Length: 131
Length: 135
Image 1 (cartoon, each protein chain N blue to C red):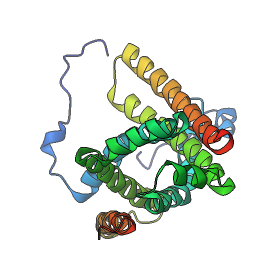
Image 2: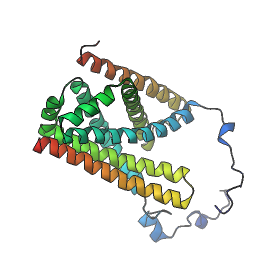
Image 3: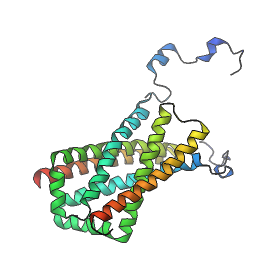
Image 4: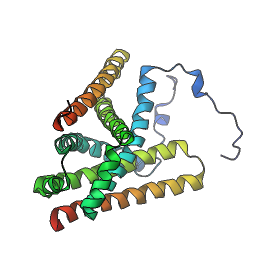
């Protein structure tokens, strides 16, 4: 702490990205991103508490293409964090530490989070008759 | 540890400290356990939330108000808000503790996240109550 110029070791860059490390940092990144989603949910609920006009404004903000893009990112982050969170709970119970299992469950997390996100948006677009 | 290490030195912690199980942070596994508890609660609550949003897509203020006024929906939304901000606060705390090394910044950000999550959670809960009770 006294000397901030001390060399850091080992440098993160010397490691080849692997499915374990990439999924791990993505879990953190999606978690931080989802904290913003929580703030957006509060804004959405508060806008409804203020009345129909402010609710309509909030809805139009999220209906903008950029709003939809952010919501899509939130949806994916939520499903990713949820699926990988289940993987974490397995580890907490002592299950799935073997390398082979780590890779299989990692791939399952990636595939299922994408599938759940696409399914959700297809159902939402189906709901407004645009699918 | 080499095999000829004396048996005694394996446990440096006093017997009292061992029983208390609080470790170096003096709070034991409380943070870890709270993070898991809120995570498990968030599994069904998040799925309920996503399905609710799907069914609400394209509806107007009136429909939203009726939906949120239903007893079960109000309760689930409040629970979702509480579990989510609790979980977010615990998670952000770990991220800050890992990456922010300046004591001043770290303390400031930890307080900001803590107060912020309480502020947003309280606002969200009050909004749910106002919409569902006052209309």
